[in-house]
Length: 431
Image (cartoon, rainbow, N blue to C red):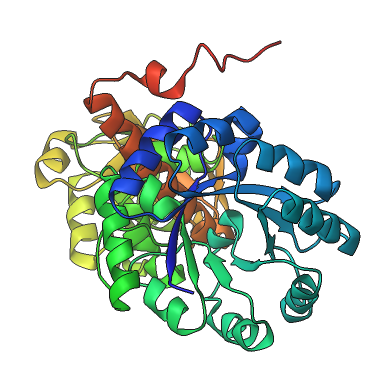
């Protein structure tokens, strides 16, 4: 089978899906997929509109059918679908009914192995039941945790079944050629195309990598691993992270004291101190590691525990910035040296170095628990703390938020509005 590029329209709004699909087809997409979110959001009408708009393209309905296989396939086929996905987790009878109904209407079934433990055995059974395609699918939520490449499983699948294999899950122009070499015939790409401000160029780049069977570096979306967290979070804002965490982790009443554009990303080194006692905050600079961010619990005090000389000391030691649930002083001088600082208060008066408190244990800053090793993202909008055990997932989700906003921003620049892009009136919550 000649390699195929399938663009997955995992979107909420049909109007946007059609516009993005048109750009993807212009860039060389062979198959169009009505993604599961689109089918659930807009129903079978999404299939009808896409088929009418792109009659020369294979239309895939990503139904992820789990039950009543024949009935759901009939709905999708009558609405224009050429290929319908059924979950490998479904009962054999569901897959069999889906296959027979699809044949009756001249369509085909793709069995999606998402969530299946024994993928090889299930793929063999799906082929035996009459499926035309197998899909090796790394789900979006799984991608956010930066799971490994499916290459090894793909090679086993290619040896186990004779029907074409589709691969989905975070694929870019850099990873697609290796997947083809491992046995894939259908490359399914969603985010790396549909989140791009220039969908046509993104599709063309991926299509070129497929045709030429070579990696092409570009701006396509990718998922970040643990060692790339600083790079990933540097691509996001505190607002992106807050969205990714569903509003959790946002420090209350902790404000940027910096020039516009100054940003802070790093791992927390926690400090506990008493009201006005600047001893432990200053000693912490010598104990912290390069790349750390001092996060100081000063109990919300309005007596300063950090100033210009401490900022210079941080610069000397490689400490990236400071977040204080308390007060900072010498703001003019700190502002000039562009050292990132965030605090609850600004005050000219400092306390005394008495030495109360400690380092490295869990503290409360801006109402949020913070431990040494947690990630801090701060900018003009505020500060967010990310628990270290969820850092990879949250970083990738925040990057996803930023990328999706980039596409919306592009649509607004083309003459729409935020309300228009999101179709807010149509989707107002019904109570």
